[in-house]
Length: 81
Image (cartoon, rainbow, N blue to C red; front, side, top):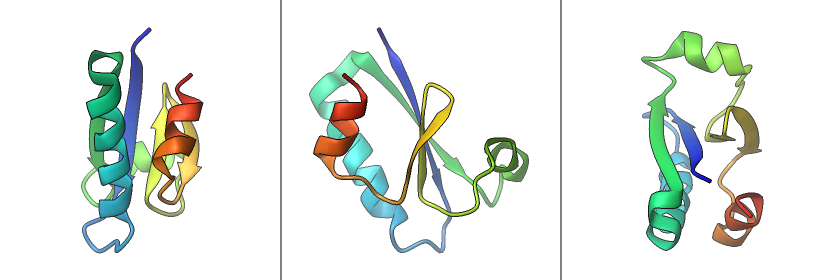
């Protein structure tokens, strides 16, 4: 099974780089088992609204928001099992 992960970020967010790093670490571990997309809420406003995102970083897995804030690598990996 391949998971689709969307990381919703903002250029002014201080925590967003941490969320991106965690997702990238998961990608290194799981390789082809996950697809990662970084979504800038400043340019993709409607997409963020469709998810009901009120704060960033937010991480969606297969179309469902699973984290608001930067998770630990262990927390993210546990959601992917």
